[in-house]
Length: 572
Image (cartoon, rainbow, N blue to C red):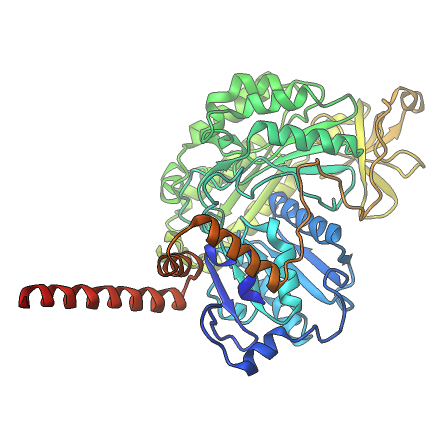
Protein backbone atom coordinates (compact mmCIF):
# COMPACT_ATOMS: atom_id res chain seq x y z
CA UNK A 1 0.00 0.00 0.00
CA UNK A 2 1.20 3.49 -0.81
CA UNK A 3 0.70 4.58 2.77
CA UNK A 4 3.10 1.96 4.04
CA UNK A 5 6.30 3.03 2.28
CA UNK A 6 8.92 3.62 4.96
CA UNK A 7 9.31 7.31 5.81
CA UNK A 8 7.32 8.29 2.71
CA UNK A 9 5.21 10.66 4.73
CA UNK A 10 8.10 12.34 6.54
CA UNK A 11 8.84 14.56 3.59
CA UNK A 12 6.90 16.88 1.32
CA UNK A 13 4.69 14.11 -0.02
CA UNK A 14 1.21 13.98 -1.44
CA UNK A 15 -0.28 10.49 -1.26
CA UNK A 16 -3.08 9.69 -3.66
CA UNK A 17 -5.13 6.63 -4.36
CA UNK A 18 -5.89 5.64 -7.92
CA UNK A 19 -8.81 8.08 -7.80
CA UNK A 20 -6.68 11.00 -6.57
CA UNK A 21 -8.22 10.98 -3.07
CA UNK A 22 -5.92 11.76 -0.14
CA UNK A 23 -6.10 8.75 2.20
CA UNK A 24 -4.03 8.84 5.43
CA UNK A 25 -3.24 5.27 6.44
CA UNK A 26 -4.50 5.54 10.02
CA UNK A 27 -7.95 6.69 8.92
CA UNK A 28 -10.50 3.99 8.24
CA UNK A 29 -11.08 3.32 4.59
CA UNK A 30 -13.96 1.58 2.99
CA UNK A 31 -13.54 -2.10 2.22
CA UNK A 32 -14.14 -1.35 -1.45
CA UNK A 33 -11.28 1.19 -1.61
CA UNK A 34 -8.92 -1.13 0.29
CA UNK A 35 -9.64 -3.92 -2.16
CA UNK A 36 -8.78 -1.63 -5.07
CA UNK A 37 -5.52 -0.50 -3.49
CA UNK A 38 -4.45 -4.03 -2.55
CA UNK A 39 -5.43 -5.59 -5.87
CA UNK A 40 -2.51 -7.42 -7.57
CA UNK A 41 -0.87 -5.88 -10.64
CA UNK A 42 -3.17 -6.00 -13.60
CA UNK A 43 -0.52 -7.63 -15.78
CA UNK A 44 0.30 -10.23 -13.14
CA UNK A 45 4.04 -9.52 -13.41
CA UNK A 46 6.26 -9.52 -10.35
CA UNK A 47 7.53 -5.99 -9.46
CA UNK A 48 11.10 -5.43 -10.64
CA UNK A 49 10.73 -7.40 -13.86
CA UNK A 50 9.08 -4.86 -16.16
CA UNK A 51 10.78 -2.66 -18.77
CA UNK A 52 11.42 1.04 -18.16
CA UNK A 53 12.18 3.80 -20.65
CA UNK A 54 14.43 6.53 -19.16
CA UNK A 55 14.69 9.85 -21.02
CA UNK A 56 16.79 12.80 -19.84
CA UNK A 57 16.97 16.38 -21.09
CA UNK A 58 19.36 19.15 -20.10
CA UNK A 59 22.77 19.59 -18.53
CA UNK A 60 25.40 17.03 -17.58
CA UNK A 61 24.17 17.16 -13.96
CA UNK A 62 20.76 16.03 -15.16
CA UNK A 63 22.36 13.34 -17.30
CA UNK A 64 24.22 12.03 -14.27
CA UNK A 65 20.92 11.86 -12.35
CA UNK A 66 19.36 9.94 -15.23
CA UNK A 67 22.25 7.47 -15.26
CA UNK A 68 21.87 6.88 -11.52
CA UNK A 69 18.13 6.27 -11.79
CA UNK A 70 18.58 3.82 -14.66
CA UNK A 71 21.31 2.02 -12.73
CA UNK A 72 19.23 1.57 -9.60
CA UNK A 73 16.27 0.27 -11.56
CA UNK A 74 18.46 -2.18 -13.49
CA UNK A 75 20.14 -3.39 -10.29
CA UNK A 76 16.70 -4.08 -8.84
CA UNK A 77 15.72 -6.20 -11.84
CA UNK A 78 13.96 -3.79 -14.22
CA UNK A 79 14.96 -3.83 -17.89
CA UNK A 80 16.07 -0.44 -19.20
CA UNK A 81 14.90 -0.03 -22.78
CA UNK A 82 15.36 2.59 -25.47
CA UNK A 83 12.05 1.59 -27.08
CA UNK A 84 9.49 3.80 -25.38
CA UNK A 85 6.53 2.22 -27.19
CA UNK A 86 7.29 -1.20 -25.71
CA UNK A 87 8.17 0.03 -22.20
CA UNK A 88 5.86 -0.68 -19.26
CA UNK A 89 6.72 2.68 -17.64
CA UNK A 90 8.44 5.93 -18.59
CA UNK A 91 10.86 7.88 -16.41
CA UNK A 92 11.11 11.43 -17.80
CA UNK A 93 13.92 13.56 -16.36
CA UNK A 94 13.39 17.24 -17.18
CA UNK A 95 15.29 20.52 -17.58
CA UNK A 96 13.86 23.93 -16.64
CA UNK A 97 16.64 26.28 -17.82
CA UNK A 98 14.70 27.46 -20.88
CA UNK A 99 11.03 27.51 -21.85
CA UNK A 100 11.63 25.38 -24.99
CA UNK A 101 13.24 22.59 -22.95
CA UNK A 102 10.24 22.56 -20.60
CA UNK A 103 7.86 22.50 -23.59
CA UNK A 104 9.58 19.37 -24.93
CA UNK A 105 9.12 17.73 -21.53
CA UNK A 106 5.42 18.69 -21.36
CA UNK A 107 4.85 17.33 -24.87
CA UNK A 108 6.45 14.04 -23.82
CA UNK A 109 4.06 13.83 -20.86
CA UNK A 110 1.08 14.43 -23.16
CA UNK A 111 2.35 11.69 -25.46
CA UNK A 112 2.68 9.31 -22.50
CA UNK A 113 -0.83 10.04 -21.30
CA UNK A 114 -2.23 9.50 -24.77
CA UNK A 115 -0.44 6.14 -24.88
CA UNK A 116 -1.73 5.37 -21.34
CA UNK A 117 1.81 4.84 -20.10
CA UNK A 118 2.50 4.95 -16.34
CA UNK A 119 5.06 7.72 -15.82
CA UNK A 120 7.45 9.02 -13.17
CA UNK A 121 8.34 12.66 -13.74
CA UNK A 122 11.72 13.81 -12.44
CA UNK A 123 14.15 16.69 -12.69
CA UNK A 124 13.97 20.44 -12.26
CA UNK A 125 10.56 21.14 -13.81
CA UNK A 126 8.37 19.16 -11.35
CA UNK A 127 10.66 20.09 -8.46
CA UNK A 128 10.30 23.79 -9.22
CA UNK A 129 6.63 23.72 -10.34
CA UNK A 130 4.97 20.69 -8.72
CA UNK A 131 1.45 22.11 -9.13
CA UNK A 132 1.40 22.31 -12.94
CA UNK A 133 -1.93 20.86 -14.17
CA UNK A 134 -0.13 18.44 -16.51
CA UNK A 135 1.29 16.62 -13.45
CA UNK A 136 -2.14 15.65 -12.14
CA UNK A 137 -2.44 11.93 -11.28
CA UNK A 138 1.19 11.35 -12.27
CA UNK A 139 4.07 10.34 -9.99
CA UNK A 140 6.78 12.90 -9.26
CA UNK A 141 10.28 12.36 -7.86
CA UNK A 142 12.30 15.32 -6.57
CA UNK A 143 15.90 16.09 -7.55
CA UNK A 144 17.14 15.37 -4.02
CA UNK A 145 15.58 11.90 -3.86
CA UNK A 146 16.72 10.04 -6.96
CA UNK A 147 17.96 7.31 -4.59
CA UNK A 148 14.26 6.40 -4.11
CA UNK A 149 13.41 5.88 -7.78
CA UNK A 150 12.82 2.14 -7.26
CA UNK A 151 10.12 2.74 -4.64
CA UNK A 152 8.31 5.31 -6.76
CA UNK A 153 8.43 3.19 -9.93
CA UNK A 154 7.10 0.16 -8.07
CA UNK A 155 4.19 2.07 -6.58
CA UNK A 156 3.41 3.73 -9.91
CA UNK A 157 3.20 0.34 -11.61
CA UNK A 158 0.65 -0.64 -8.95
CA UNK A 159 -1.59 2.18 -10.14
CA UNK A 160 -0.74 4.77 -7.48
CA UNK A 161 0.51 8.29 -8.10
CA UNK A 162 3.22 9.40 -5.68
CA UNK A 163 4.71 12.85 -5.21
CA UNK A 164 8.03 12.71 -3.40
CA UNK A 165 9.40 16.24 -3.22
CA UNK A 166 11.98 17.06 -0.61
CA UNK A 167 12.72 20.78 -0.90
CA UNK A 168 15.80 20.53 1.32
CA UNK A 169 18.03 17.50 1.95
CA UNK A 170 17.58 15.86 5.34
CA UNK A 171 19.88 16.94 8.15
CA UNK A 172 22.90 14.68 8.26
CA UNK A 173 22.43 13.55 4.66
CA UNK A 174 25.74 13.22 2.77
CA UNK A 175 25.55 15.62 -0.14
CA UNK A 176 22.35 16.74 -1.88
CA UNK A 177 21.24 13.24 -2.92
CA UNK A 178 22.49 11.16 -0.01
CA UNK A 179 25.45 9.49 -1.71
CA UNK A 180 27.34 9.11 -4.97
CA UNK A 181 27.74 5.43 -4.18
CA UNK A 182 24.83 4.16 -6.27
CA UNK A 183 24.76 1.95 -9.37
CA UNK A 184 24.43 3.75 -12.68
CA UNK A 185 24.22 2.97 -16.39
CA UNK A 186 26.59 5.33 -18.17
CA UNK A 187 25.27 6.71 -21.44
CA UNK A 188 28.86 6.46 -22.64
CA UNK A 189 30.83 3.71 -20.82
CA UNK A 190 34.00 5.78 -21.30
CA UNK A 191 32.68 8.88 -19.51
CA UNK A 192 31.86 9.22 -15.81
CA UNK A 193 29.86 12.31 -14.84
CA UNK A 194 30.28 13.23 -11.16
CA UNK A 195 28.06 15.84 -9.56
CA UNK A 196 30.33 17.56 -7.04
CA UNK A 197 27.64 19.86 -5.63
CA UNK A 198 24.05 20.90 -6.19
CA UNK A 199 22.42 24.30 -6.03
CA UNK A 200 24.28 27.60 -6.05
CA UNK A 201 24.99 30.83 -4.17
CA UNK A 202 23.33 33.14 -6.70
CA UNK A 203 19.85 34.59 -7.01
CA UNK A 204 19.82 35.31 -10.75
CA UNK A 205 16.59 37.05 -11.66
CA UNK A 206 15.96 34.94 -14.77
CA UNK A 207 16.88 31.51 -13.40
CA UNK A 208 14.32 28.81 -12.68
CA UNK A 209 16.89 26.14 -11.79
CA UNK A 210 17.48 27.79 -8.41
CA UNK A 211 13.85 27.04 -7.52
CA UNK A 212 14.53 23.35 -8.09
CA UNK A 213 18.12 22.80 -6.94
CA UNK A 214 18.12 25.30 -4.09
CA UNK A 215 21.15 26.55 -2.17
CA UNK A 216 24.66 25.19 -2.39
CA UNK A 217 25.29 21.73 -0.98
CA UNK A 218 28.61 19.99 -1.69
CA UNK A 219 29.59 16.35 -1.56
CA UNK A 220 32.55 15.48 0.68
CA UNK A 221 35.81 15.22 -1.29
CA UNK A 222 36.27 11.63 -0.09
CA UNK A 223 32.93 10.67 -1.65
CA UNK A 224 33.90 12.21 -4.99
CA UNK A 225 37.38 10.62 -5.02
CA UNK A 226 35.86 7.22 -4.15
CA UNK A 227 33.44 7.54 -7.07
CA UNK A 228 36.26 8.49 -9.45
CA UNK A 229 38.40 5.52 -8.38
CA UNK A 230 35.47 3.15 -8.90
CA UNK A 231 34.81 4.60 -12.37
CA UNK A 232 38.47 4.26 -13.36
CA UNK A 233 38.44 0.61 -12.25
CA UNK A 234 35.52 0.10 -14.68
CA UNK A 235 37.42 1.42 -17.68
CA UNK A 236 36.28 5.05 -17.73
CA UNK A 237 38.60 7.38 -19.69
CA UNK A 238 37.10 10.79 -18.94
CA UNK A 239 35.79 12.14 -15.64
CA UNK A 240 33.52 15.16 -15.89
CA UNK A 241 32.95 17.29 -12.79
CA UNK A 242 29.56 18.94 -12.98
CA UNK A 243 27.13 21.10 -11.00
CA UNK A 244 25.13 24.30 -11.39
CA UNK A 245 28.35 26.19 -10.56
CA UNK A 246 31.53 24.19 -9.97
CA UNK A 247 33.42 27.27 -8.74
CA UNK A 248 31.31 27.34 -5.58
CA UNK A 249 32.30 23.80 -4.60
CA UNK A 250 33.21 23.31 -0.96
CA UNK A 251 32.23 26.73 0.39
CA UNK A 252 29.61 25.08 2.59
CA UNK A 253 32.00 22.40 3.91
CA UNK A 254 35.19 24.48 4.25
CA UNK A 255 36.87 23.04 1.20
CA UNK A 256 37.79 24.38 -2.25
CA UNK A 257 37.68 23.43 -5.91
CA UNK A 258 41.48 23.45 -6.44
CA UNK A 259 41.97 21.09 -3.48
CA UNK A 260 39.33 18.72 -4.82
CA UNK A 261 40.85 18.68 -8.29
CA UNK A 262 44.31 18.01 -6.88
CA UNK A 263 42.86 15.10 -4.88
CA UNK A 264 41.47 13.68 -8.12
CA UNK A 265 44.67 14.24 -10.09
CA UNK A 266 46.48 12.17 -7.45
CA UNK A 267 44.34 9.08 -8.23
CA UNK A 268 43.88 9.50 -11.99
CA UNK A 269 46.31 7.38 -14.05
CA UNK A 270 47.86 8.27 -17.38
CA UNK A 271 45.33 7.78 -20.17
CA UNK A 272 42.41 9.20 -18.16
CA UNK A 273 41.44 12.88 -18.43
CA UNK A 274 39.64 15.20 -16.01
CA UNK A 275 37.21 17.86 -17.30
CA UNK A 276 35.76 20.70 -15.23
CA UNK A 277 32.22 21.91 -15.85
CA UNK A 278 30.72 25.40 -15.84
CA UNK A 279 31.85 28.00 -13.30
CA UNK A 280 30.65 31.57 -12.87
CA UNK A 281 33.28 34.37 -12.74
CA UNK A 282 32.89 35.65 -9.14
CA UNK A 283 33.72 32.31 -7.50
CA UNK A 284 36.60 31.56 -9.82
CA UNK A 285 38.50 34.81 -9.34
CA UNK A 286 40.11 33.95 -6.01
CA UNK A 287 41.36 30.61 -7.36
CA UNK A 288 42.96 31.87 -10.58
CA UNK A 289 46.63 31.04 -9.78
CA UNK A 290 45.75 27.63 -8.33
CA UNK A 291 43.38 26.77 -11.16
CA UNK A 292 45.90 27.83 -13.81
CA UNK A 293 48.28 25.31 -12.27
CA UNK A 294 45.53 22.65 -12.36
CA UNK A 295 44.68 23.36 -16.02
CA UNK A 296 48.35 22.99 -16.95
CA UNK A 297 48.42 19.43 -15.63
CA UNK A 298 48.69 16.89 -18.48
CA UNK A 299 45.68 14.91 -17.21
CA UNK A 300 43.31 17.91 -17.06
CA UNK A 301 41.62 19.39 -20.14
CA UNK A 302 42.51 23.06 -20.64
CA UNK A 303 38.92 24.18 -21.16
CA UNK A 304 36.49 26.18 -19.05
CA UNK A 305 32.87 27.19 -19.57
CA UNK A 306 32.48 30.70 -18.08
CA UNK A 307 29.15 32.42 -18.85
CA UNK A 308 29.26 36.17 -19.47
CA UNK A 309 25.53 36.49 -20.39
CA UNK A 310 25.93 40.19 -21.24
CA UNK A 311 28.83 42.62 -21.66
CA UNK A 312 27.00 45.48 -19.95
CA UNK A 313 27.32 46.01 -16.20
CA UNK A 314 23.85 47.55 -16.00
CA UNK A 315 22.33 44.40 -17.56
CA UNK A 316 24.41 42.14 -15.30
CA UNK A 317 23.15 44.11 -12.30
CA UNK A 318 19.51 43.54 -13.32
CA UNK A 319 20.36 39.87 -13.74
CA UNK A 320 21.96 39.88 -10.23
CA UNK A 321 25.00 38.09 -11.61
CA UNK A 322 27.38 39.27 -8.84
CA UNK A 323 30.22 40.18 -11.21
CA UNK A 324 31.19 42.86 -13.70
CA UNK A 325 32.46 42.65 -17.26
CA UNK A 326 35.88 43.53 -15.85
CA UNK A 327 35.73 40.44 -13.60
CA UNK A 328 34.89 38.23 -16.57
CA UNK A 329 37.75 39.69 -18.59
CA UNK A 330 40.17 39.12 -15.72
CA UNK A 331 39.32 35.41 -15.58
CA UNK A 332 39.61 34.94 -19.35
CA UNK A 333 42.77 37.02 -19.74
CA UNK A 334 44.60 35.39 -16.83
CA UNK A 335 43.89 31.85 -18.02
CA UNK A 336 44.77 32.70 -21.63
CA UNK A 337 48.09 34.17 -20.48
CA UNK A 338 49.04 31.40 -18.03
CA UNK A 339 47.63 28.25 -19.64
CA UNK A 340 48.92 27.46 -23.16
CA UNK A 341 46.06 26.44 -25.47
CA UNK A 342 43.39 27.42 -22.94
CA UNK A 343 39.90 27.28 -24.47
CA UNK A 344 37.10 29.46 -23.06
CA UNK A 345 33.43 28.77 -23.80
CA UNK A 346 30.72 31.24 -22.82
CA UNK A 347 26.97 32.01 -22.87
CA UNK A 348 25.02 35.07 -23.98
CA UNK A 349 21.36 35.95 -23.34
CA UNK A 350 19.92 38.12 -26.13
CA UNK A 351 17.37 40.79 -25.23
CA UNK A 352 17.29 40.64 -21.44
CA UNK A 353 14.69 43.13 -20.07
CA UNK A 354 16.07 46.66 -20.15
CA UNK A 355 18.94 45.83 -22.51
CA UNK A 356 19.50 48.90 -24.71
CA UNK A 357 21.08 49.01 -28.15
CA UNK A 358 24.24 50.38 -26.54
CA UNK A 359 24.27 47.45 -24.09
CA UNK A 360 23.87 45.03 -26.99
CA UNK A 361 26.70 46.60 -28.97
CA UNK A 362 29.04 45.99 -26.02
CA UNK A 363 28.17 42.29 -26.12
CA UNK A 364 28.87 42.11 -29.85
CA UNK A 365 32.20 43.87 -29.31
CA UNK A 366 33.21 41.41 -26.57
CA UNK A 367 32.44 38.36 -28.72
CA UNK A 368 34.24 39.90 -31.69
CA UNK A 369 37.28 40.62 -29.52
CA UNK A 370 37.69 37.20 -27.88
CA UNK A 371 36.32 35.03 -30.72
CA UNK A 372 35.17 32.26 -28.40
CA UNK A 373 35.43 28.81 -30.04
CA UNK A 374 32.12 27.80 -28.44
CA UNK A 375 29.26 30.23 -27.79
CA UNK A 376 25.84 29.29 -26.38
CA UNK A 377 23.30 31.82 -27.65
CA UNK A 378 19.87 32.11 -26.00
CA UNK A 379 16.95 34.44 -26.51
CA UNK A 380 15.47 35.71 -23.27
CA UNK A 381 12.46 33.69 -22.16
CA UNK A 382 10.55 34.84 -19.06
CA UNK A 383 10.36 31.90 -16.66
CA UNK A 384 7.24 31.89 -14.44
CA UNK A 385 7.95 32.79 -10.84
CA UNK A 386 11.22 34.60 -11.54
CA UNK A 387 11.76 38.35 -10.95
CA UNK A 388 12.76 38.85 -14.59
CA UNK A 389 9.33 37.66 -15.71
CA UNK A 390 7.87 40.85 -14.19
CA UNK A 391 10.35 43.17 -15.90
CA UNK A 392 9.48 45.15 -19.02
CA UNK A 393 10.56 43.07 -21.98
CA UNK A 394 12.48 44.03 -25.08
CA UNK A 395 10.33 43.74 -28.20
CA UNK A 396 10.21 40.11 -29.34
CA UNK A 397 11.19 40.94 -32.90
CA UNK A 398 14.20 42.87 -31.62
CA UNK A 399 15.22 39.94 -29.39
CA UNK A 400 15.13 37.61 -32.40
CA UNK A 401 17.07 40.12 -34.49
CA UNK A 402 19.81 40.33 -31.87
CA UNK A 403 19.98 36.56 -31.71
CA UNK A 404 20.43 36.36 -35.48
CA UNK A 405 23.02 39.14 -35.42
CA UNK A 406 25.11 37.37 -32.78
CA UNK A 407 24.78 34.05 -34.59
CA UNK A 408 26.05 35.67 -37.79
CA UNK A 409 28.99 37.19 -35.92
CA UNK A 410 29.88 33.84 -34.36
CA UNK A 411 29.67 32.15 -37.77
CA UNK A 412 31.90 34.78 -39.38
CA UNK A 413 35.13 33.77 -37.69
CA UNK A 414 37.08 30.52 -37.49
CA UNK A 415 39.51 29.57 -34.73
CA UNK A 416 41.04 26.28 -35.88
CA UNK A 417 42.73 26.95 -39.26
CA UNK A 418 46.04 27.87 -37.61
CA UNK A 419 46.21 24.34 -36.19
CA UNK A 420 46.67 22.63 -39.58
CA UNK A 421 49.95 20.73 -39.62
CA UNK A 422 50.25 20.61 -35.84
CA UNK A 423 50.54 17.38 -33.84
CA UNK A 424 48.34 16.70 -30.81
CA UNK A 425 47.90 13.89 -28.36
CA UNK A 426 44.21 12.96 -28.27
CA UNK A 427 41.79 10.62 -26.51
CA UNK A 428 38.99 8.97 -28.54
CA UNK A 429 35.76 8.56 -26.59
CA UNK A 430 32.74 8.37 -28.91
CA UNK A 431 31.38 7.82 -32.41
CA UNK A 432 30.76 10.95 -34.49
CA UNK A 433 27.29 11.81 -35.77
CA UNK A 434 28.32 10.96 -39.32
CA UNK A 435 29.02 7.38 -38.12
CA UNK A 436 32.25 7.49 -40.15
CA UNK A 437 34.67 8.88 -37.54
CA UNK A 438 35.53 8.63 -33.89
CA UNK A 439 35.47 11.83 -31.86
CA UNK A 440 38.68 12.46 -29.96
CA UNK A 441 39.78 15.50 -27.94
CA UNK A 442 43.14 17.18 -27.54
CA UNK A 443 44.33 19.01 -24.41
CA UNK A 444 42.24 22.08 -25.35
CA UNK A 445 39.18 19.85 -25.76
CA UNK A 446 38.94 20.61 -29.48
CA UNK A 447 36.84 18.05 -31.33
CA UNK A 448 39.22 15.97 -33.45
CA UNK A 449 37.71 13.54 -35.97
CA UNK A 450 39.76 10.40 -36.64
CA UNK A 451 39.15 7.23 -38.72
CA UNK A 452 37.10 4.46 -37.08
CA UNK A 453 39.99 2.03 -36.85
CA UNK A 454 39.39 -1.09 -34.79
CA UNK A 455 40.51 -0.84 -31.18
CA UNK A 456 40.93 2.94 -31.26
CA UNK A 457 38.02 3.90 -28.99
CA UNK A 458 39.21 4.60 -25.45
CA UNK A 459 42.85 4.94 -26.53
CA UNK A 460 45.25 7.90 -26.39
CA UNK A 461 47.46 8.51 -29.42
CA UNK A 462 48.93 11.27 -31.56
CA UNK A 463 47.43 12.83 -34.67
CA UNK A 464 48.55 15.34 -37.28
CA UNK A 465 45.86 17.87 -38.21
CA UNK A 466 45.20 17.82 -41.96
CA UNK A 467 41.94 19.82 -42.17
CA UNK A 468 39.77 22.05 -40.00
CA UNK A 469 36.23 23.40 -39.87
CA UNK A 470 34.27 25.74 -37.63
CA UNK A 471 33.69 23.12 -34.95
CA UNK A 472 36.20 20.37 -35.67
CA UNK A 473 39.70 19.27 -36.65
CA UNK A 474 40.45 16.23 -38.79
CA UNK A 475 43.44 14.24 -37.65
CA UNK A 476 45.72 11.74 -39.37
CA UNK A 477 46.78 9.02 -36.93
CA UNK A 478 50.48 8.66 -36.19
CA UNK A 479 50.63 4.87 -36.03
CA UNK A 480 53.80 4.67 -33.91
CA UNK A 481 52.03 6.51 -31.07
CA UNK A 482 49.51 3.68 -30.66
CA UNK A 483 52.22 1.47 -29.20
CA UNK A 484 52.76 4.00 -26.42
CA UNK A 485 49.14 3.95 -25.22
CA UNK A 486 48.91 3.07 -21.49
CA UNK A 487 47.22 -0.16 -20.43
CA UNK A 488 43.95 0.50 -18.60
CA UNK A 489 40.94 -1.61 -17.51
CA UNK A 490 38.48 -2.47 -20.28
CA UNK A 491 35.29 -0.34 -20.16
CA UNK A 492 31.94 -1.87 -19.31
CA UNK A 493 29.76 -2.90 -22.23
CA UNK A 494 27.14 -0.32 -23.23
CA UNK A 495 24.05 -0.59 -21.05
CA UNK A 496 25.77 -2.53 -18.27
CA UNK A 497 25.20 -1.39 -14.70
CA UNK A 498 28.21 -0.05 -12.81
CA UNK A 499 29.19 -1.58 -9.51
CA UNK A 500 29.19 0.10 -6.10
CA UNK A 501 31.17 -0.18 -2.90
CA UNK A 502 30.02 -2.60 -0.21
CA UNK A 503 28.18 0.16 1.66
CA UNK A 504 25.39 0.43 -0.94
CA UNK A 505 22.31 -1.62 -0.12
CA UNK A 506 19.76 -2.55 -2.77
CA UNK A 507 16.24 -1.37 -1.89
CA UNK A 508 14.25 -4.18 -0.28
CA UNK A 509 10.64 -4.89 -1.13
CA UNK A 510 8.58 -4.07 1.93
CA UNK A 511 5.21 -5.70 2.44
CA UNK A 512 2.36 -4.27 4.49
CA UNK A 513 3.15 -6.81 7.20
CA UNK A 514 6.83 -5.76 7.30
CA UNK A 515 5.87 -2.11 7.71
CA UNK A 516 3.41 -2.75 10.53
CA UNK A 517 5.79 -5.01 12.43
CA UNK A 518 8.63 -2.53 12.21
CA UNK A 519 6.45 0.32 13.44
CA UNK A 520 5.25 -1.84 16.30
CA UNK A 521 8.86 -2.58 17.32
CA UNK A 522 9.75 1.11 17.14
CA UNK A 523 6.71 2.02 19.26
CA UNK A 524 7.59 -0.50 21.97
CA UNK A 525 11.20 0.62 21.98
CA UNK A 526 10.31 4.28 22.34
CA UNK A 527 7.96 3.51 25.24
CA UNK A 528 5.76 6.52 24.61
CA UNK A 529 2.10 6.77 25.50
CA UNK A 530 -0.25 5.66 22.75
CA UNK A 531 -1.97 9.02 22.47
CA UNK A 532 1.30 10.91 22.27
CA UNK A 533 2.71 8.47 19.72
CA UNK A 534 -0.39 8.79 17.54
CA UNK A 535 -0.13 12.58 17.60
CA UNK A 536 3.59 12.56 16.78
CA UNK A 537 3.16 10.13 13.92
CA UNK A 538 0.38 12.17 12.37
CA UNK A 539 2.33 15.43 12.65
CA UNK A 540 5.52 13.87 11.25
CA UNK A 541 4.14 11.60 8.58
CA UNK A 542 1.33 13.43 6.85
CA UNK A 543 1.77 16.52 4.74
CA UNK A 544 -0.88 18.45 2.88
CA UNK A 545 -4.63 18.50 3.64
CA UNK A 546 -4.62 15.44 5.92
CA UNK A 547 -2.02 16.98 8.24
CA UNK A 548 -3.92 20.26 8.46
CA UNK A 549 -7.18 18.53 9.40
CA UNK A 550 -5.63 16.17 11.98
CA UNK A 551 -3.55 18.87 13.67
CA UNK A 552 -6.56 21.19 13.79
CA UNK A 553 -8.67 18.48 15.45
CA UNK A 554 -5.96 17.72 18.01
CA UNK A 555 -5.46 21.40 18.85
CA UNK A 556 -9.24 21.87 19.23
CA UNK A 557 -9.52 18.88 21.59
CA UNK A 558 -6.63 20.11 23.73
CA UNK A 559 -8.13 23.60 23.96
CA UNK A 560 -11.54 22.22 24.82
CA UNK A 561 -10.08 20.08 27.58
CA UNK A 562 -8.12 23.05 28.93
CA UNK A 563 -11.24 25.28 28.98
CA UNK A 564 -13.27 22.59 30.74
CA UNK A 565 -10.65 21.99 33.44
CA UNK A 566 -10.27 25.74 33.99
CA UNK A 567 -14.05 26.18 34.30
CA UNK A 568 -14.36 23.31 36.81
CA UNK A 569 -11.53 24.73 38.93
CA UNK A 570 -13.11 28.21 38.96
CA UNK A 571 -16.51 26.75 39.86
CA UNK A 572 -15.05 24.82 42.77
